[in-house]
Amino acid sequence: MAKAGKISKDVLAEFSTEKNKRPFGNIPPRRYYLIACEGEETETNYFEAIKRILPPAMVSRVSITGTGRNTRSLVDYTQKLVDARRKSSALPPYYKIWVVFDRDSFEPSDFDNAISMIESKSTDTEQWQAAWSNEAFELWYILHYLPQSGGAKHRQEYQDILAKQMKRPYEKNAEDMFDLLKPYVVDAIERADTALRLQRGKPYHDQNPATTVHLLVKELLSYLQKQ
Image 1 (cartoon, one colour):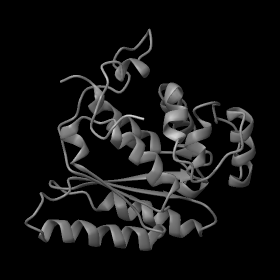
Image 2: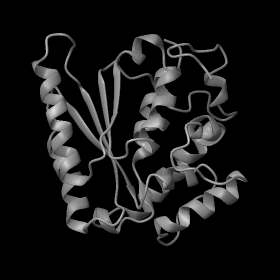
Image 3: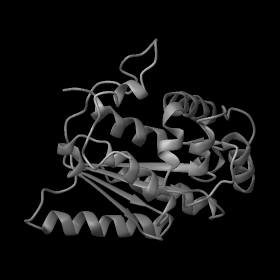
């Protein structure tokens, strides 16, 4: 496993394809990130693994927290973290705020309202975005193996699908998921784009299967490219 902030000379080659040598697009400006996750382990373990391979200048700019909160309470808690950071003189305020959560079995209005709240918070000095999944974060994992452009699947099906594709039991809080799925992440981003496009126009709670997690993943991985 790579040490924090240490990038091997071949790290980008792991993601590049013959048709696309810059699979994640142009390098964005360096920003301070807060990634606030609904789950305390599954999502945080995944994003911490990405953070470990980022350039040293970005490792210190990315904060990841697992909250154990969901929908409206997650958004409210994230706002408190953003406010506290803004009032602190120790570090610059967060500019990119990503809120990561699932549809699960929450009321449709709770899920939809949480996304709408997040979208309404962006200003010139703060960019808020929702990395949501319908129904669960594991949909993002499945997209590394299979397209999901058909009908809705219940989250209870995800574990069996993943176990079959990975050829091992799926462990929800496994720490090695990013490393395991890394060879397929470019395909997963393309499949997630397709799934989201096919669901567009519906209320968020009806966009199943769909996720926007790939937008955050793509943004983070874009920092891997040489300056």
